[in-house]
Image 1 (spheres, one colour):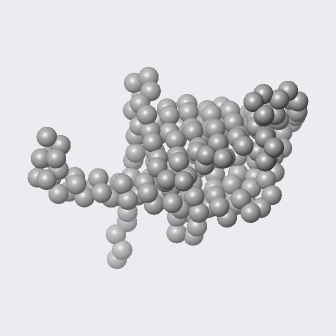
Image 2: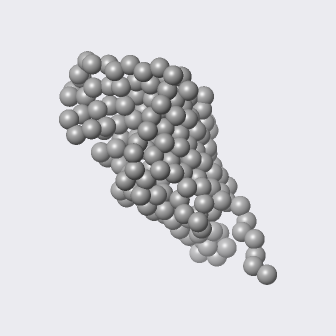
Image 3: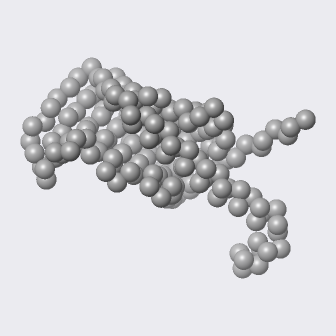
Length: 181
């Protein structure tokens, strides 16, 4: 049925192709920015700090809370709490929570800056996966606005996945592009 509808409605088919292109463009540019930012120091600050020396499954934990700020190149994050999981090779995972956690990163001149808000952001460094939950809102001038309760990004495959949760659907709003004169 959908196939029949799409074959009859070229405008809708074109919009879907455009949407898929935009999502792939967003993730590929996001990955490039992350790679360039990884070459500079990772700075984490907070009002409170605790090294949790208990080792579980080969991981130790470092916890920062109250006015947490992270900076690495153009990446800037504000959160209420950050927990870093470290293994023998370094930081393997970062879990950020807040009301909300805010994150921004400059991608490039054309793409500009991306802004993200969520109640929880979990970055699994070794897997190149970012999981965002709780009132997730992503905004960029090129991609528009994406929101939902659960959104994940696979930085290896450039896949973005949104999942309906508690009757809240995933939403993407693409702003019309101004026409060149």
